[in-house]
Length: 412
Image 1: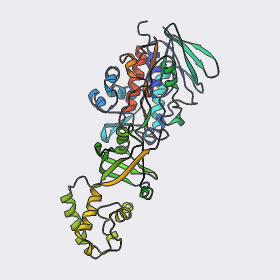
Image 2: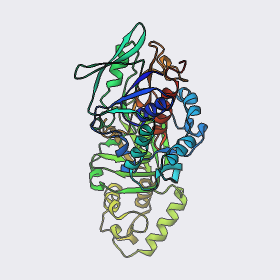
Image 3: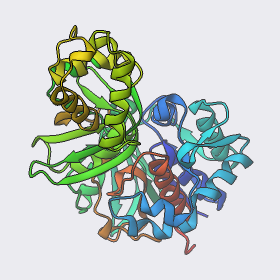
Image 4: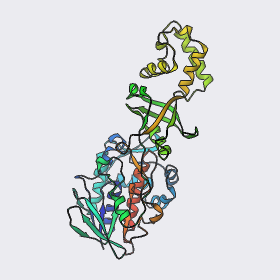
């Protein structure tokens, strides 16, 4: 058949290489790191949220940027087909809350091993510790690559799967954007996305490590408009906030940062103000003779209590039976809308994904081929497509990689 080079050994690259090789092509995968799937190893806190157990429409609903571009790729390889492929490769998987799919072992390395088996079965030739410095083009066609050490490697087609800028320690340093620009592609403005947020309030550091479940957040932009709200889990860090709902929120404000946004945390979303006030009155009656700071344990996590006492400006040692209606109202308001001022993000070092990338108007969505250079395909995070947390971004990588591997030189 033909010789194909895949640049990048992450999720998209391994799928692209395995699929192209399964069609009989001689496939060479070049990876700058000394091992494959380095970013996969740290996803899902080392457990790897492989995909989301949703149909195509469900996948598309979770892509805020250019979802239309993914129709064709998801029909080449959807979440259910991906799960079956992994099972066939010997990986046991399970579905957890939010339809998130994980390996039964809870070990991301088992996902990497399965994808490596896919390539080995199809005789992909792997070249580790071998960075690529340039994609070579002649007469409007991709004809090979130049390695960083200076070697020219000829090929009939090239698939670029070099990732974005998130987690640069894994090798995602934007190489693919450079390759794309060099052949005339537009790369949109890039942002760290699905990223922890920084807050200006100093009391955040006192809550570092505190995880809140079953809360609801609202994010207001500088004009006071609610731009995001979601129910779920969050976590305090030494500089601000993180956790699933925060990462999703970051996607909705990244274009406006560093302008200050207001984050409001509803600690008790299951109760409206009236019900919560009734509950507070009941607890205050129960602990009538105690100090205020010792009367909140039934409603709030222990670590949060001193902060709430400080913020609602009620003396910690004030007896509960002498707390006024106005003071109780201040506490109630805080519990329904604990405010934080968001000033920025934790940056690419902690971002799950890069928002922005190669302009998808310049890529054929049914093949992932460049509209400018024949036999040059792009897949994965290097493209201007990104999604929310829950396995959707890895599915984008798998589907675009598989499509590129299936369609490259398909006319042979």
